[in-house]
Length: 131
Image 1 (cartoon, rainbow, N blue to C red):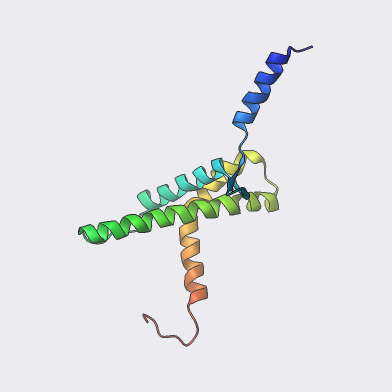
Image 2 (cartoon, rainbow, N blue to C red):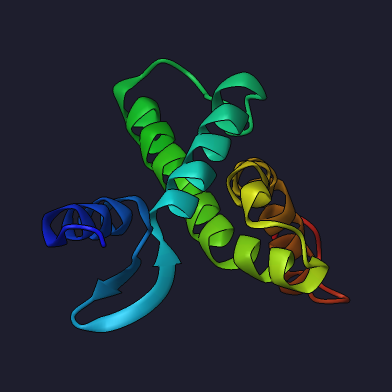
């Protein structure tokens, strides 16, 4: 029979490893912190290495706008990865070990997919280009 202190220590260690769902104002969001971080990493890879959010001139106004745009893209990509990755893995019935690499890929590709969806659904037929 195991001693109670070793069982409690194993329970505490297991609880520290398992990812809890995030809550805001007492409402569970259904997001896991590890998936959000993996999606954020994927968005950073896409922004830095693939230059997904290109910069403009070197004035401080343009640099401020660029920083806000990059933060918004990273936020949107990580939220998209946080919600879509578990759904994709549920539909395709792949193992749990693929969750974080898949979240990184979803975060890296989310900004391109979101940009195309926004352009597709916001562009009304008969509307002139460039506005």
